[in-house]
Length: 69
Image (cartoon, rainbow, N blue to C red; front, side, top):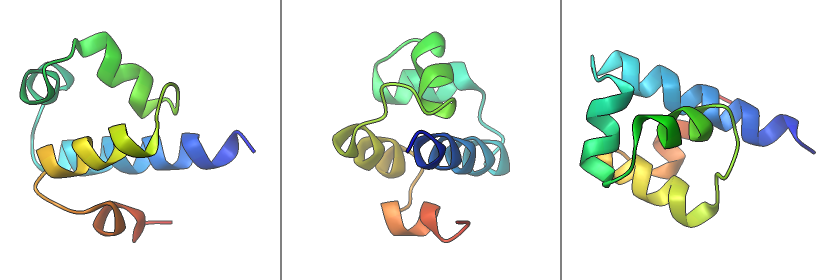
């Protein structure tokens, strides 16, 4: 079960990097710390609500990120 959050976190990381954003910059867009972004990208503390907000901050949708699965 823990595999899916880790895969989603990796897809978030890939999308962030493709936009040349640092974890700090994405965190600033979301109002969270760089450490929090690191946890999201590791699949930790990644709720559907958080995933939705991250996708919006990256200018995409949840399904847009999940296309990499």
